[in-house]
Length: 281
Image 1 (cartoon, rainbow, N blue to C red):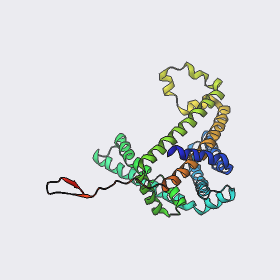
Image 2: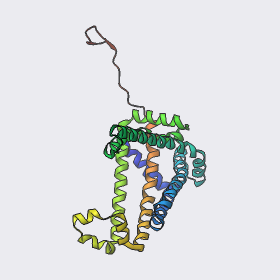
Image 3: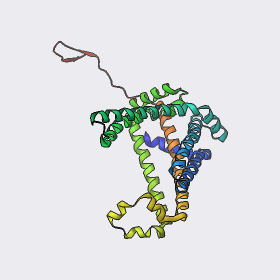
Image 4: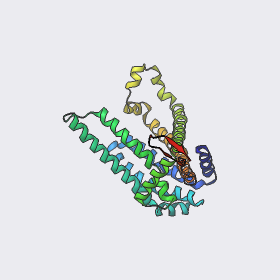
């Protein structure tokens, strides 16, 4: 199933050019954030990350709405994005609030259990144990909101129900998304290294200890201002290719999920006797 929906997503972004708009916007925002991070530091850039996320919600909702209606126009994307904007945004804000609440609770528990000191390893382990299943179950809340026209908490419950009924397919979906993301990162990392080969050449003389100790700031200083702009360009192109594919794949995959019955356990007719033995009718 997961590969069939991937083929549908590839076909969609190949036949509907407007589906590339979210990738272009996301790529431009990522490139700008990278440049600002190096020019102004993290304080100003961190605030722009939030604004960028709010901007991208419009195009995420628009992409899902466009695929849901099987249309191809930019006007439809904008209209659907505006219509479903808060239905896509609010569930993720609820999930973010839950994550913050869990993190605060875990922090308090670990401080009380360790006498007031922070046990970062235990905090991280507990956070992962709680947050990963939550994210796994609620990941399709935004697609549920658009494809089934649901409100905030209903879309969260619907995502949990759909994922619970198709856990194997959803796990396969995440594996495919990971492979696609890794392939995109690997290809464009090779392109980046090729474009900046002369500037990165000194790294070849580093031993393993020196290479492991290099910081991002040292790497940025090594590639210089020209390398910063080249990196921004590579980030832009890499995101342009990845984001439309992942969004279209998520939409096509969810459309396929709700069109398939959930896995059920067949209950055979029969009864247990007084000794616990099963007799089938």
